[in-house]
Amino acid sequence: MGYVFVLMVGLVAGTISGIVGTGSSIMLMPVLVYQFGPKQAVPIMAVAAVMANLSRILAWWRDVDWRACAAYSITGIPAAALGARTLLALPSHTVDIAIGAFLIAMVPVRHWLARHHLKANLWHLMIGGALIGYLTGIVASTGPLSVPLFLFYGLSKGAFLATEAASSLGLYASKSVTFERFGALTSDVALKGLIAGSSLMAGAFVAKRFVLHLKPESFRLIMDGIMLAAGVALLWSAATS
Picture 1 (tube, rainbow, N blue to C red):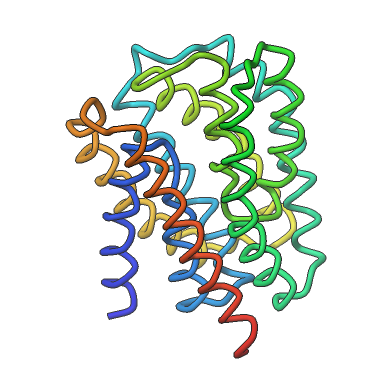
Picture 2 (spheres, helix red, strand yellow; picture 1 turned 90 degrees about the vertical axis):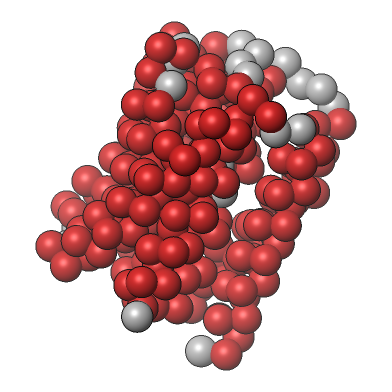
């Protein structure tokens, strides 16, 4: 029944992330932490995130901005590996608290970024890739940061979804390889990641038909609600463990 619940949440998370560009890790991570513990949940989510981003690339293949993807990935991939190595040295209790606090903190940060109407270029994507890549290695999701970065670059709808997914794919692949290199990504963990990722992939293709009809205000409300709920759930898990 635990796997069925993970698949159900994964399908919903994959659909929402396929519409707004992020959110799958934020929604699924508390479920994985509850089911498998924080130390297993992060590498499981890394594998599942690779599959989720791959599905968005396949759904919007023709719209990928490969220049933006390359600028973001060239610094983000090595930074994600460094962040993943940092994560493995942290105690499980600290991981729970860090992820929960990060998700909650991203709500005001995202609003601050939106109010300042920042414009990004390729250099900004490289700098952002390094910072966000390192955080991606430590926490389950940095979508609330990468989403505005690519939007400020000027991408929207299919182009935004595809390019953000292609850029994130390299980061999560780097993270997964690092976990495997240091023994955190066993065959059992990888299988759990594939199971969770399959539902995220299905959700991404379900979402494609809804993308053009989503209003900006709906996006903001969905993301704020998801981040707050997931952050509180993880902090509660840390407090009661």
